[in-house]
Amino acid sequence: MKVIVDSDVWSEALRKKGGEPSPERNFLGELITEKRVQLLGCIRQEALQGLRDEAQFERLRAALQAFPERQPSQNEYEMAASFYNLCRSKGIQGSSTDFLICACSAVWGLPILTKDRDFGLYAQHFPLKLVKV
Image (cartoon, rainbow, N blue to C red):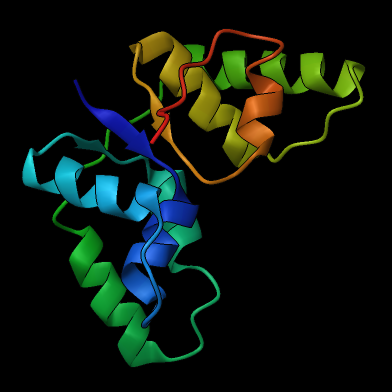
């Protein structure tokens, strides 16, 4: 089964120098080896944003090109808006990107690998499978 890998895990894997890798980073290595990574365009964008050095941007862009994207449909976008509205009504803030990731996960039946604790909050209000490492 493929796994949607959030941008925070990609950022650690592709940008962080030195230090002990997180369990999520180690698991990403396994997913890559097993060809089980599912990438979304919005995650690719988040992973590449904020790079001031053009050479680093090009290196990361080239590395991410190895992973094809699955495109969300109208259904996923509508579900993301519904998830956003539901969480907002409960006083939970989140980004449009986070809710699109959640909707893709729910519709496609794929778990999410993330270090972002907000996803745990979202999972309290709609079906969401998170990878525990």
